[in-house]
Amino acid sequence: MKNYIPFPVRAGTTSRQAHANLPEGSYEREIGKEGFFGPASHMYHKHPPTGWIDWEGPLRPRAFDLNKLSGSISCPWQAPDILFNANVRLRFWHLSQKMDHLVRNGDGDELLFIHEGNGELYCDFGHLSVRAGDYVMIPRSTMWRLEPQGSGIKLLLIEATNSSYQLPEKGLVGAHAIFDPAMLDVPAIDEAFRAQQDEKKWQVRIKRQQLISTVTYPFNPLDAMGWKGDLAPVRINVADIRPLISHRYHLPPSAHTTFVANRFVICTFAPRPFESAPDAIKIPFFHNNDDYDEVLFYHAGDFFSRDNIKAGMITFHPCGFTHGPHPKALQNMLVQKKPATDEYAVMIDTRDALETGASTRDIENLAYVNSWKKS
Ligand SMILES: [Fe+2]
Image (cartoon, rainbow, N blue to C red; front, side):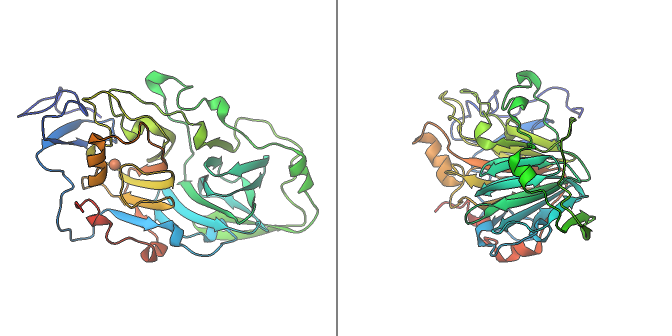
């Protein structure tokens, strides 16, 4: 995107370096285009930009507690939609029994993010054991099923509707930063895979344009003897992500990009030391991410920039308003209690407006908009 102001201009009292050396008593807010890559300005405010006392109208920050969704669902296509648009569909799925059928997504690649539990994934390409913290990217039209262990498995399903997941450009830091592509696991044609092959009747539920068709085979179609090629499901665990950090500069969320697809990105927040330079800010800066809707799923740990948020919750910050740390986090920044964050969270940033699914009505925290008020 070409900047229409060809060089940074300044007015009044400012810092020259973003996210550092803020003018005394100021609150910095970034106003930016194209995620964190386009033209941007930094405002230095006398008050926190999230200091509203009243809010009316349909645009507002939202929070949903996915822990309140009840009941196990045997097929991912029945899992409730949480947020969606033409490019991405986010569902939350609780599976407690092993699936008795196969599924195939004809609408796009599917990214599973395992929030709780572990189990066995069987697919066209073989067998893969999965556990909490795994991202499992399943290419469009792959047949698969899951067998959870113990009390079941809870996961996010993130469909890249009509597109494909790719790894992001790593730019200056090179291909092996954050995680080495060699860390990606693929399913194996192993003993467990061969053992599940049978001559019984199997159904495949195919989703295409959100409609389900059921195809029945007189045998298990997961019957590969082998495969070769450069297209397969891949798995990486959040524990294998080695986040970029700078001791002097708070990096924007885009530094944590894990996967990209058409008109949305997925970033992973993994534990990392706080910035140590005295003049560097240590928590997310206030910002309007003016071209993106932002979604954050809280997977595990202590979510340092948010009060009253626990694992299994999701926040949705549509573009058009400023957000940033909660008051307690802002205060704690000055008295650092911990040397590092210990949070794992999945961020989904979408270029187009998201809609909420009907099931979110019963699980929304309607007071979330007030959560930036000082208690
Ligand atoms: Fe944000």
